[in-house]
Image 1 (cartoon, rainbow, N blue to C red):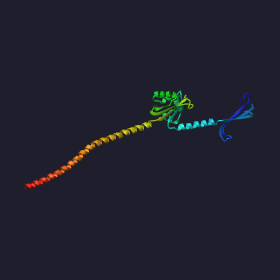
Image 2 (image 1 turned 90 degrees about the vertical axis):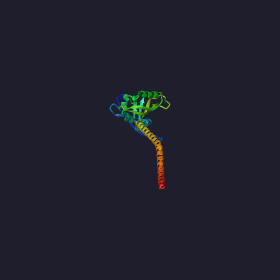
Image 3 (image 1 turned 30 degrees about the vertical axis):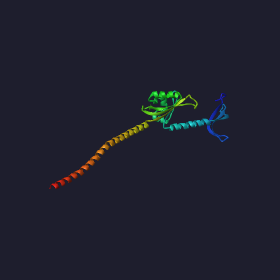
Image 4 (image 1 turned 180 degrees about the horizontal axis):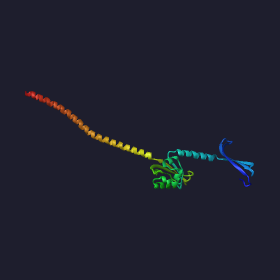
Length: 239
């Protein structure tokens, strides 16, 4: 309401206009209807604000949000005080926290080892990234191995003062399970090779003995036949 008893009604509308150069711009049109103290329309004012850049930024943020939510890795954004400002869907599925829940308990709650949490924060405060394997824990108490990438968030590439932290967390449970299975398979394969080698070493002399025994058997058979022939000749000569 105006100070002289009049009033106005504002109507805002987002629309697009095309400039003379053919460029399409997003604008917010604001229409103000002026009325006197009796409610009669006495005038109007229209204003236009170019919101193209603001709209483009907003749309880019929406695209980034969709991309983050589609990511298979858990993603967290925090400020330097540890207040959580964003988590994606994968984070909620992995840790069983909503944004409100994790912000209430603090980001350190997902670290099974608090020393690791302090090490990551110290690296970020020194404006450097941190990557490594850590043990993490869900809201339900389940501890699991994870590969963590922590990166400081800066306003620009030349700015050395971070304003927040980006955490990307990859659950390594399945990978560890497969590594264990592979290691077990390799151990069994090594045992198989060892057993085959031992069997070969045993079978080689056994084969040697067997071959010679067979040779002696054949040789003695021929000698026995010869001795029998000599015996028959000897007995014939005696008669």
